[in-house]
Length: 363
Image (tube, rainbow, N blue to C red):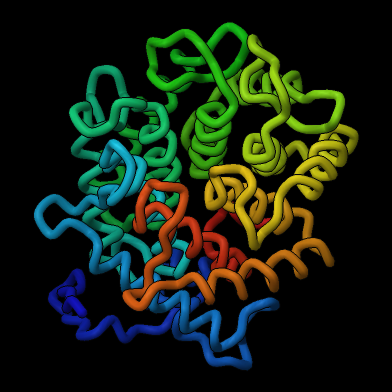
């Protein structure tokens, strides 16, 4: 396990620091590894020692998997490496454990991820992407913006805060400029088109920026939410693309519900209820009938966690038990043909939702 020198010259051998609540993190209390280090009697509802141990193993895997040369994560599967997207997702998983860019067990990989993504934020266009490794740049841009917005308020240095503010302001401008006439987004900023999966990624990024205090035009979010709602079919599910309606997609439907909650649309019950019934009918936490199992669960879990109650409790019990069986000896997970960094980051984000340490995922 790596030893990371803490800011101020302290050394943290073996990542031994314990985690505190997010409010303490933002007040600069020493923290980190909340999920892994909590005593059993203070585990949040739905978490036990076995799950906490699996989380700790998964977080340690992500720590080891980070590139020692440039501080990013890359996909180990599929046809691309997608470092902006992978770094955004892996960074979110580490932040969900209670670490920040300056405090906590995984402060160093979080710090490195921030620096990497800021370095690859184009100062002109605002897009956060690695051109020769990320063909569909809006995915990486969305996940990277989400991560950077989530750590913006955790930064302690005025110079880094100023750099991040500039990066996020330009990232928001790029998203607004890339929005299609129908209200959605497609794979690249200049595509002029739209589809569901890219759209939900941008909406979540915009919401995180707004929560962090970055100026976001509410009309941009409202138009995107309207796009998602217009994609709903009579069966309650959401189609892939508004212009080419087609059949409902379980993964996009789950994402649509989560994003509406993220955007603050809690009272649109007819839309949400129909979509949720469709997803519950077509999605299982323990088997893949979508071809995008971990992607689907990432948003399905968020939607159910936002709603709370028995549906969430039952889901977490089933999915966590399944994840424990799927975890590999090195602490990772693998799914969707994208590679272990992607699957591990998603698994850890879901398992750590009960700790409620990331604002965008909180109820």
